[in-house]
Amino acid sequence: MGAGYIQKDEGGRRRRRRSRIRPMAEINVTPFVDVMLVLLIIFMVAAPLLTVGVPVELPKTAAGALSVDQEEPLTITLTAAGSVQIQTTEVVRNDLLARLRAIAAERSSDKVFLRADGSVPYSEVMQIMGALNAGGFVNIGLVTDVGGPTLDGDGQ
Image (spheres, rainbow, N blue to C red):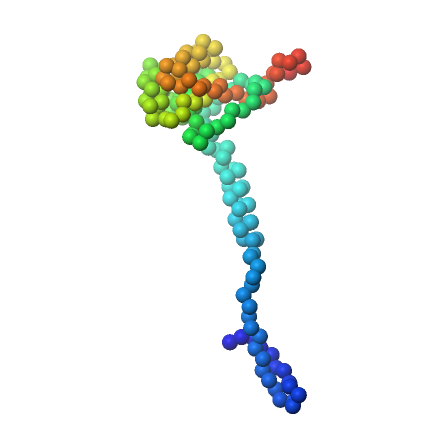
């Protein structure tokens, strides 16, 4: 049953006319935009939480960021206490080389990120870099914080 109205013709007789309901030909994009904005906010909040959560006081440099591959990057962390962690798992230094070789055999990328606390001696960082190289990782990225000295004579 459609909505109708009454109309009188020339003879004074009543005629009922039904109007046809036509489908709407326009697409309502408002719900789509609402869903996309909610998803954008969720990903903006969740993305920083997906980084490796080992607390390290990284040294500051003026270097730019490295590009990231599709594969999840492998991260090795040296903490101020001297412990070594692969992603978030603590590893004994004697087992580090064997674990790195096993991981390198499973991965398609030879890229690894090395995070070291600023208070860790340079010699320890170089020992870990040597173990990474011996373990099959030749593409080593050193992770730092931005905002350090540029060493260009500006005093920063």
